[in-house]
Image 1 (cartoon, rainbow, N blue to C red):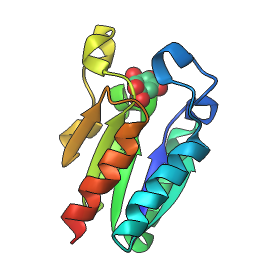
Image 2 (cartoon, protein in one colour):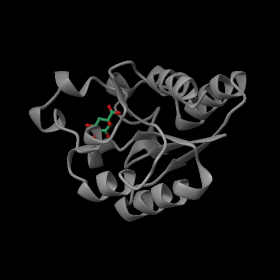
Image 3 (cartoon, helix red, strand yellow):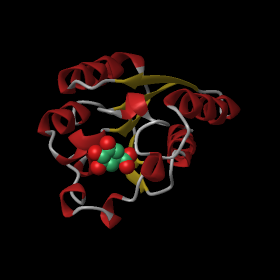
Image 4 (tube, protein in one colour):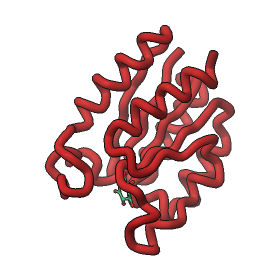
Length: 143
Ligand code: DQA
């Protein structure tokens, strides 16, 4: 089965953007690590990144046909986007939300995530390893 790994704004700069918070690994590294975990369980991943809310909504809509599960780091849209929450609510499979940093240890405006109202699980503060942990959990939920 196919697992979508969706990434929101500024995560195209992962590895270069505030490395003291987000680390040095890039999204390509994330994709490699997630693909390895998924392959162990006979699944595949497709990674997407967009800086545009509507594109993320459209990719979630495409997942309704194309994907069995979603791992999503909505980035700053976590804290603002009812549109992304609504899109996820049209998706039937498992959804795990990932934050590289521990959002609860940061500014109070990062403490609330709309996406958490839909997510089956949330991983925060485990660095980029959180993505592979999320894929592992998705595989358990799919099996
Ligand atoms: C983030 C946390 C968000 O608050 C922030 O806007 C991001 C990344 C994380 O992965 O830790 O862009 O989602």
